[in-house]
Length: 245
Ligand code: PXP
Image 1 (cartoon, rainbow, N blue to C red):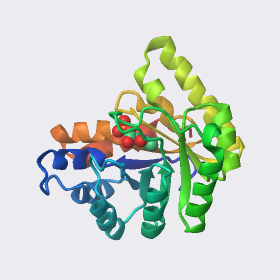
Image 2: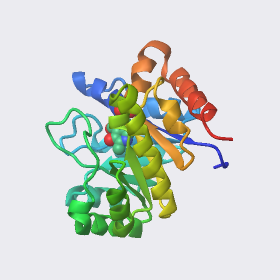
Image 3: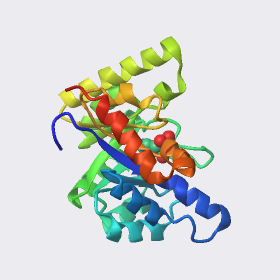
Image 4: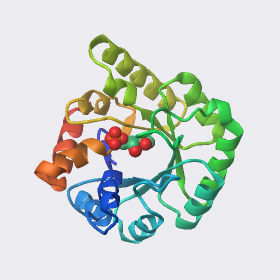
């Protein structure tokens, strides 16, 4: 990637959510992924949840064979998911915390509290040729735990920033800026995501150390009215326009 550029990973989970609402074949997450790639997505992100509420095992297999860019599989660090990921070998895995009752991934992974388990998962995935990112809150102690666990990357949880307003949002952004700088200084690749939309994306895209954003809900919501390719093109335009020269 060129210096100064930033990648967009398009999360297609919500297309699968809509499909599952009727239990049929439509809308097809594969078609969404291919359209997003054609419109300039740098990667496709999908979360195979333990309860299979949206993405199904078959989607993972089909997408693995069809994607032209990168497959980023979000998953919990359970034995069953690790088995599956080692079999599928996506380009990247993002380890996330998972609670059955949550609407979406509500907080970052507490790497500090489960360092040995996460380190083992990192080792297993890395050994299979998969790049591992840990989805963490923008806290220095979690960044340092991610380094010790052997992750190649962290994805900073932008949910607190996205949900705040005014001074609270500025403070949340400052925490993201500091965590991104700290993580890059520790040699980690830095991604960010969650709750980013067309209005709040630019200050995060402007953080020099952040090289990838993963965005789902806002893109699929916009796609209902304007189509997915137009939504992806507009998000990439906003992200790139915010980059430091
Ligand atoms: N990154 C991670 C690790 C996530 O779990 C999610 C939600 O699935 C996203 C990014 C995308 O969040 P949103 O759908 O709010 O853009």
